[in-house]
Length: 124
Image (cartoon, rainbow, N blue to C red; front, side, top):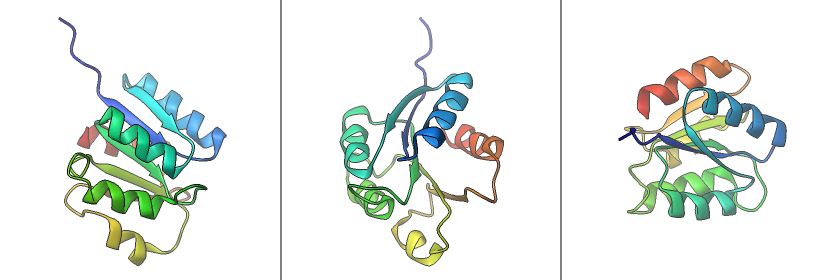
C-alpha cells in the first residue's frame, strides 16, 4: 500500500504567488489545496485537516491574522502547523496570533522559495 501524501493548504490571494507555491510543493510530492482568501481558507482547513497551512496575511474576506487566530483556537485545527508568509512589518501583532511551538514566520522579500519549502518539509 502506498504511503499517504502529506497535504498542504496554501491560502494566498495573489494568483501568481499561489500558483508558484502550488507547483513547487507538488514537485516535492505534496497533495496541494489552495484558497484565495481567509474565509475560503478557514472552510477548507476544517474540511481537509491538512498537514500544514501556508498562509499569506493580507487578503480580502478574512485577513490572515484573523485566520491564524481562528486556526490556533479551534480544537480541530490548533495542532496544524502554519507557515506565515508576508511582507508586513507588523511582526509583534502577527506573533501574538501565532503558536510559537508550531507556527513559523517568513518575510516574502527576505526568504527564498527553497527556504520556505525546506521549512515546510521539516515540519510536515
